[in-house]
Image (cartoon, rainbow, N blue to C red):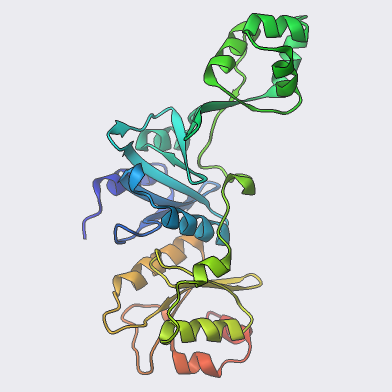
Length: 313
């Protein structure tokens, strides 16, 4: 299957910058289709042509998976509707950063964008401590700096006391007066504080499970083993589970028409993210790929989560 042009662009950038990566032959509604790791960067990405096509449910699962494996979620898109994304901006989409391929390239080269674009406007983040130090070096009072920059004294006080977000026009006026750059680059590749995005609670992701069938049974058996578990509906795998430091992505072959490319995509995802990968199938199932697999009967007979972990030792 030939990847989409946007995925090929992302793949080329990752390869040229020496990152380990994998792209998934995922359907258009998948929450991610590219993963990458290397040089202190760990990314789970959804690459698509039009940012407006990214649904909230996809972004929620992208966040949840990223949180699970300590990676940064990122959307890469060419445009928003008819408007191309700016290479000098990051776009906030349901709490996750989205960037153009050009902005991704800049970030990989250590020159990330400066502007954050959200539904409420365009903003930059400034170094308030640097504002205070430079103001004092120039012998300016708070009132004098406020007058020269065209803002109130309270605004200057708020920047110097920790408020970082402001408009580009105010930041540029301050830089002109102070004579130093004060804007903090918006690195979309860097791990961010948890308040930047919030993964949905596990119970939200469990809600859509069928009441009967193999998928529900596997979920119940994993829960009986006291594993922390989360179900997914827009990923190549159905479940992620962990017990202490042991983490795994699980494909549950719950139908005769189960798409084997999901298993291959999960295997590549697990290899890049350094996770264990398990396939659980019905009785007599033979996994077509070189992946650890068990039938549901074997899982039913387990009584301790360490028995699962022992499969990978």
